[in-house]
Length: 75
View (spheres, rainbow, N blue to C red):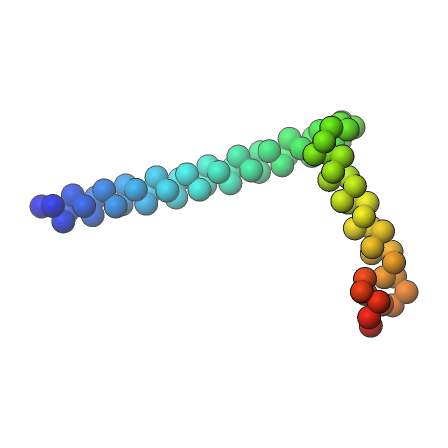
């Protein structure tokens, strides 16, 4: 009897945990979509500006490696 109750409680806990992880991923995805919308609208606040600077820095480092070497100067 107690074994069955314990198994039931473990199953419920696992279901709540899985649904919690799924919900967290949905929140992250929604947040990323809102951030993309803010970038499209021309928002210049902290996180948006940081992401834009990171994007530009990645492009600059990629252009430096356009001569046949990678970003570390090696072939």
